[in-house]
Image (cartoon, rainbow, N blue to C red):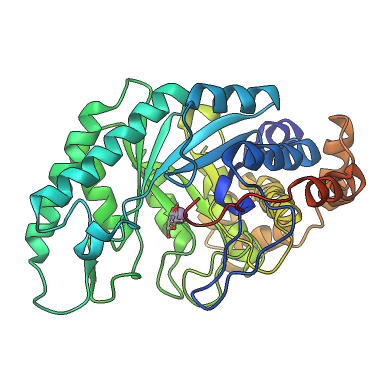
Length: 382
Ligand code: RM4
Ligand code: MN
């Protein structure tokens, strides 16, 4: 169990270190990075405190730089590597009616060219995953042809898939609604799964925990996709209402445990299955670096509880039809305080048992507030 916890890799999002907010207000935080290099400096603090976050996902063009090899080197010098490249085809004026499913072939070309450019970036950074989320959809009945949009989406995905290197993957994300409110072209895991099946082995579904209707049983989706070998990874975050992008494990730690129990039971923590554990969240009012540390800890705690489930006892109770017994096995694990165990694992790795205290003591926060003066703080768009 300790070995599995030591081996766990949680990928943190570059955009979690920048300013973010709601459509009402973005509150700037002193010391926020001004460029992707500084975002990596902050991510390195999360890894230094937790020992579990050596990979950072990029968002293009928010993290566009002139020299991606230099960015990868900057990461390496800090004990990090660059992870998933998130393509962004939702912020250009051309995308009013969509990107890869847009009715105008010129706009589709622009969008696909951006996705292909993201694969070029992956070649330079050594990234494995191209993570695709599309804002595509419609707002009004009759606005566009639902089937036609599926055809255009499939065609675009096929072109990008053909460009991937042998070791590269497409992680295809789905989301029920927003910013489109009538139809979304990839609204659910089934649609994403069907497109991935048509593309081939290196196209896999990514489950963003904030992208479902309230009450959706996400662990069922996870179990199904793992069984099919089609779970590419997670975008972890918490939600109370819609796509709230709050800290992973904050709103519903029991759900995170149930999801990770399915991962544990179906071998999804083994590196060779390729399941990526990413955070996709924003910190609008709380300190950004400590919030990412807290999120990593939350995922670790849910993982430890999931690994604690006595699978033999669970299976015995299940096959005996012992409903309450089986449920009790699961709840016993969930109700165990795993914090002392994780503190022990950290100490054995030469880390502070308390990552948040370690960060506070590092002086990094005071340093960035003092040093990062002037320039433009990073946010959604930089
Ligand atoms: C989307 C989706 C993507 C993320 C952007 C910022 O809702 O979750 O994964 O890159 O937001
Ligand atoms: Mn996401």
